[in-house]
Length: 300
Image 1 (cartoon, rainbow, N blue to C red):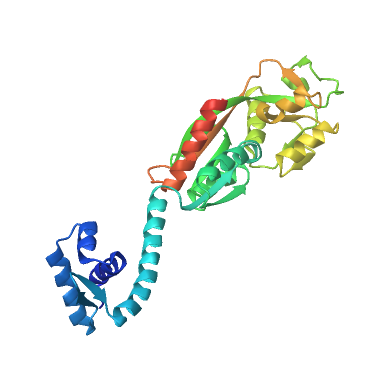
Image 2: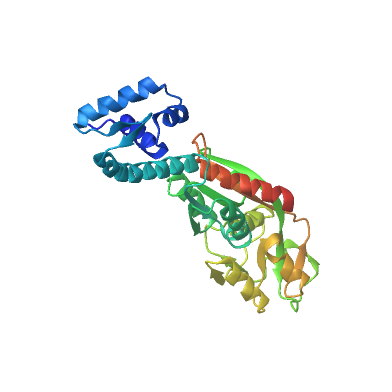
C-alpha cells in the first residue's frame, strides 16, 4: 500500500520547492524528511528528487506525480474541513417535528436565524399534532420536537425544556353575542366549536376542562387538520375556538376576533423543546436549540 505520509512529504517539498522550507513547515528535521523521500522512491521504483546546486529539482516523473498529489490533498483538505464543520455544527442534518403553533408562528423565524449562521445544515420539518410529534420523537423519526401543550403530559422517556407560556383564550367573531362578555363555562360549552383534529393538545385541554367543571363537552361540528383554517372559520362567523393567545392576539387587536371571558377559567399553554432523555444530540441540533433559547429569552 502506498505510504500516504511519505507522499504528503513529497507533495510539501514539491510545492515549497525546498527540503528546508518543507521541513520547517512540517516541524520535521531535514535528515528525517530526506530519509522518508528516499524510502518512498525505493518503494515505488521512481526517482523523484535530484540535486541542483545547493537545492533540489523535481524529475519529470515527480512533476507528473505532483499533478496527482495536488488533487489528492485538495480533496483531503476538503474532507478535513467537512469533519471540522460537522463537529462545529456547520454541517449535518436536523429532523424536526413541530405542533401547529410553533410550526406556523415561531419556527420560521428561528430557522431563518439559524440558517444565516449554519447554511449547510440540512433541515426537515414535519408539522403535526402533539400526539404524533411525541410519537415521532420516541420512534426516532425526528431528533427534536417543538411542542405546544402541557409538559406534564409527556412520557418519562422525553426531556422537555419549557421556553415560555402563554394563555389559552376562548374567541368568537366580533359580532357574536358573547364577544367581550363574562360568562359561565356552562354557557360557553353550549356553543358549537371549531377545533383541530383529535390528538391536538388544545382540544384535549378543552375536554379536560369540561371534566374538571363537570360540564358536558361542546359539540365540535367542524374540525380542521390545520390551526389557521380553524381560526379563519371563526373569523368568518361560525362557532368558537379555544386557542393559544399567541396565535390570535393580533386578530383580537385588529378586531377580527373577540375574546370571551369564561368565569373561573385561566389556563396556560407551554411551549417546549422536547428531546429523548439521556441521548446525546448532534452538534448541529445543539446549536439550533441554543438559537431557540437565545431568541426566546429576548422575545418572551
